[in-house]
Image (cartoon, rainbow, N blue to C red; front, side):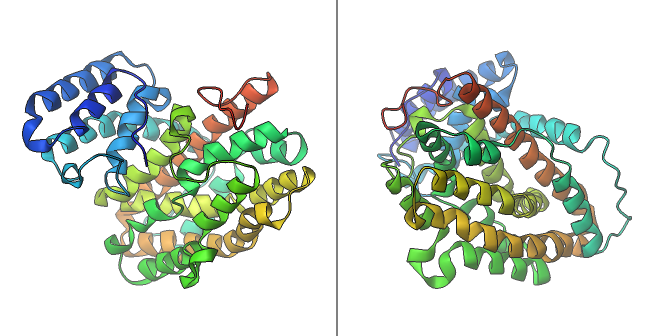
Amino acid sequence: MKFPSPKGPVSSALRAVLSGRPEDAAEDLDLLHRLAAAQLAETTDIISDDDLQLTLFCLYELHYSGLGGVTDEWEWEPDLLRVRRLLEKPFEAALRSAAHETVAGLEFQPADNPTSDQVAQVLFTLASSDTGPSVSRYVARKASLDQLKEFLIHKSIYQLKEADPHTWAIPRLTGRPKAALVEIQADEYGGGRPERMHSVLFARSMRGLGLDDRYGAYIDTIPAISLAAVNLMSMCGLNRRLRGAITGHLAIYEMTSSQPNRFDANGFRRHGFGTDVTHYFDEHVEADAVHEQIAGRDLAGGLVEAEPALLDDVLFGAAAAMAVDARMSVHLLAAWDSGRTSLRASEPAAA
């Protein structure tokens, strides 16, 4: 993807660093670290900080398909990883605080050594506790065509590389949870048929609404909260110590997506779109209904059975996903209800 337009001093400094080569960037790297530390000291909410979330997103992107004009030598540069770690610590702390608020008051007490079924039941209880505003119901009943375009733009930053953050966990698991994750991911990647990959289906939905389906095409318009949702996945997927969190994230993602995808498909049909647009959503109605059982019992539950100490991280990953999704829903609906764009800037294709 193209290198995004900076959103503040830290992402500007990162762009300057990555425009060169690691062996020539000692002073620029030091400046980047100092600017990041200063911004962290000043920000009141790292989750909604456009500059810091974009910086973290770009640092993670080096481990995916890379950034246009940036040499691959940067991926494992120690001083750049030092900056990433500097940002990850407060980001993780903020997510853990938000996750704690999400589970506060819920009535479940897992056993000391819970079975996979007990872990799944805890996750289903958590999934059913979500009573916040529903973007999908809005999409089904009220969203205008322009709002549908914005909806796809927000989702594109993950859906056009769907499954990739969770795939990082495969080599970190063994036995039953590993097999479960591979089974889920095989479906996400189209079962060996590239035209059935979920990312390809989503790209077709974007084209059906006249949107640019290139990965990252709308990165300059996407706000911090949408970037934070993807950064959560990348952080948990790339750090082995958070393997419990990435499995919990995937489990709750599958448990809470089947019905919303049904609503989303109905919203696009309400505007007269056919299967070329709705196939992506219709596919997830069926697939996620199956995946939620595999993810809850065999993946997350199987992991906790094998490593009981990871239960707290499984719950963290699940609850953090719900907390960020709730904030994103509030952002989208507040903008749409007041007649404003939910994007950072007016995008011609969706304005």
